[in-house]
Length: 96
Ligand SMILES: [Zn+2]
Image (cartoon, rainbow, N blue to C red; front, side, top):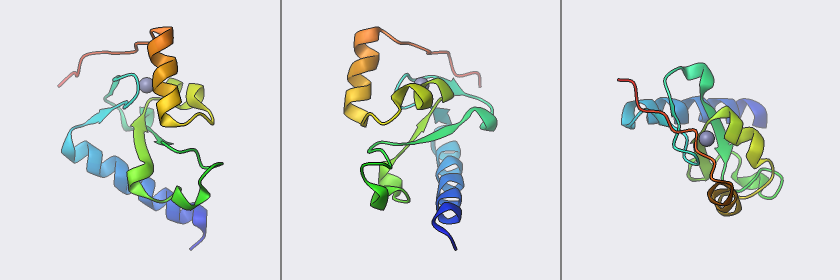
C-alpha cells in the first residue's frame, strides 16, 4: 500500500468516526457540515513539517474547506490565533 492510499484510508475512517461521535464540525471555525462532500481533514501539524504524522489520527482535525485553504502550512495554534484576530466565524447551527 502506498502512503497516499494509507492516508486515504485513515482519512475515511476518521470522517466515519467523527460522524458517529458527534457529526462534522470544523475544529477551527466551529462550522457544522451536513454533507460529507463538505468535510475536509486537516493536519494540525502540517505535513510539510511532520511527514511522519500524516497518518496519525491524533494529528488529524475535521475542518471546513475555507479553513483548510486558509490554514495552509500554519500549525494549529497559529491558525487559531489568526482566526481569533480576524474574527472569522463561519458558524451555522447544526441542522439535525
Ligand atoms: Zn472552518
